[in-house]
Image (tube, rainbow, N blue to C red; front, side, top):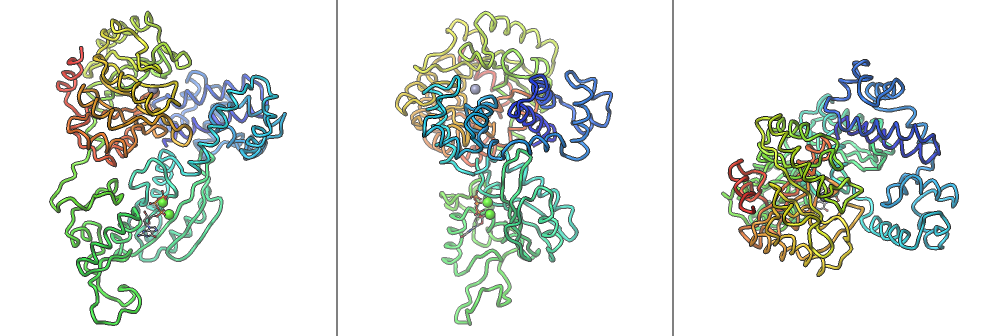
Amino acid sequence: MSRNAELAGLLQQMADLMELTGADRFRVAAHARASRTVDSITQDIDELADDRDALLAVDGIGAKMADKIQEFSRTGRIGEHEALLQEVPPGLLGVMDVPGLGPKTVRLLWKELGVEGVDDLKRVIDDGSILNLPRMGEKTVANIRDALVFARASAERTPLGVALPAALALVQRLEGVKGVSRVEYAGSVRRGRATIGDVDILACAEDGGAAHEMFRAMPEVEKVLASGETKTSVRLLTSRNKRLQADLRTVGREHYGAALLYFTGSKEHNVRLRERAIRMGMTLNEYGLYKESKGKKTEGSPQSRGEKPVASRTEEDIYAALGLPWIPPELREGAGELDHPADHDFGLIEIADIKAELHAHTDASDGRMSIVELAERAKERGFHTIAVTDHSKSQPIAGGLHPDRLREHIEHIHAARSRVKGITILAGSEVDILADGSLDYDDELLAKLDIVVASPHAALKQDPDAATRRLLRAIAHPLVHILGHPTGRLINRREGMSPDIRALALAAAEHGTALEINANWMRLDLRDAHVRMALDISPDTLIAIDCDVHSESDFDQLGFGVLTARRGGLTPSRCVNTWPAKKLHAWLKSKR
Ligand code: DGT
Ligand code: CA
Ligand code: CA
Ligand code: ZN
């Protein structure tokens, strides 16, 4: 998380907490507005905070807000935020995370029904007392109950978008510790899984004492779970007030590669590697790859007998000694990745391959930037093309555009082209796929657009058959280029639809429609397994990786989308965002 995003999250939480504690609504609004402002400004917040006049010149930041921002910049905290946290039961924040429950309702639940946590919420749903609150009908309650059930089923795994920045911050701090020569995150974070059980950090140090001491003493450590000479386990409180476990292991240079391989996993990958080692007359463990000691005394492990490993310093050495190429961590799931011939180049897509963003919102709907700002930010990222795809009319909450406003918007997009040179600005729409698979604009209007991303936003509880039929209709529509976030899932919050991905992929290949991996870490939709299925079923499947940009920082979501794509085995040529401008534009025109 960037510092701007961290501060924005903190200010938004202050607004929520104030609403919970019944603060003046102008103060609530001021903090919510400041949060949006901080999230959308392009300058680094710490730089800005150094210059109080510049800070005060920002729209919506007054003297008091400037104080808070400067406090955050200096100390990483805001005292008033911590005071607010003291005022509410800690469990109430968990209640606020339940989809469909805003601070106003949560305040009522707390004050009227004594709800202080998710368990209490469940109780007032079960005994029906929740229905006594104003504006709380059977249907709303049923939705809350569903959300609760889903949140429990996906209990406690942390989204990659929260765990990865936390892991990076730990790595950076450990890099500064005396005696530490190398640090990396391992485990499921390194493999890029969409959700993370705990963060695993590996540091190279002949004496790891100082590293473990630092790790235990970090300010965000809530509890030390285990501590030894080579391993420490702690529970952290992240800046979003979420709990996250982190494990640190230290290992000497001689064994670093073996340890990195072991702790990156997955467990299944490790098992396959060990079986392969055994077939080759060797043993593999977290210290190295060793020759099987035939006939010799075999008490203890090879390293404890002081044996010299065949390979142990780098992952490459170990894979090579096993007759394998180095395998990208994203593929290490024990799903056939060892079956490739030794000279196979996986050739997976990388962030640098992406040259276009094809799903972005402006302030015409629910985005924060103007068309010109959006185009400039995209250009700074080195993109040759940016598509402006605001919401369509059935999304009034997201500022969806009525047909007349879209016609006007298209004019504005065309006008912006002369103001930002060196990047192609496409006029597009993220058009809703309605429940029956029809689109939210008529064909005459869609045909005026350079690009159409069709996405489902409502009726996401459809049964799989209905969902498949609905999405197939959109895929086959001759004016649609991309199927946006196909299932509508939100990680840990909403299951989304379960369409037949193979059927979608076959149809998409036939009609030359790309399936989106929405890179936003809360979505990652398509998910990794879907990407693999879609690619496997036809050589013609096209994938789009898009950030669904609403504010500038959203361009940074790209990494999550690329990790997901790599886990699905995506190579650059099958991703439309990697194509040169000419090829991309020709594909878009082929549907006009
Ligand atoms: P997570 O934390 O649930 O998202 O998933 P991982 O893969 O990070 O799992 P974790 O943290 O339990 O362990 C990190 C790595 O250590 C794991 O990917 C492989 C290795 N590992 C842990 N336990 C075992 C085990 O019992 N056998 C083998 N072969 N490897 C293990
Ligand atoms: Ca882990
Ligand atoms: Ca672990
Ligand atoms: Zn959308």
